[in-house]
Length: 112
Image 1 (cartoon, rainbow, N blue to C red):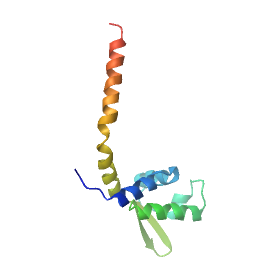
Image 2: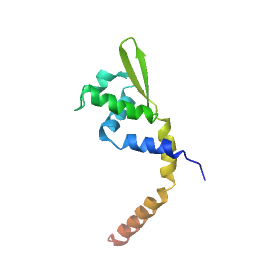
Image 3: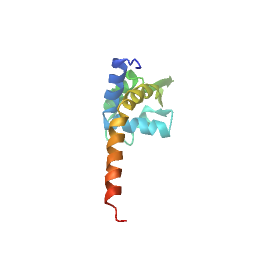
């Protein structure tokens, strides 16, 4: 069995638990290297709130920040998600079995 660093996975899942942070990551996936101002613009939060979200994402290792002059740009760093996905994969058979049962039930009831 693989060894997982629980503190790392805990930080990853905590960071992913907030919808604003998930929106930030989605946007960075589509547009890497955005400035903090560009990231904040479409969201319903102000700059201090954005900075708190970015700190959580940074502590989880999910983003990297780069300062050039007065501009801070942010990029996605998805490596911690790999460990979280490996952990989740251990439980895949639980939902796969349920879906297989549902498929069998539906196929059983289909008119011939």
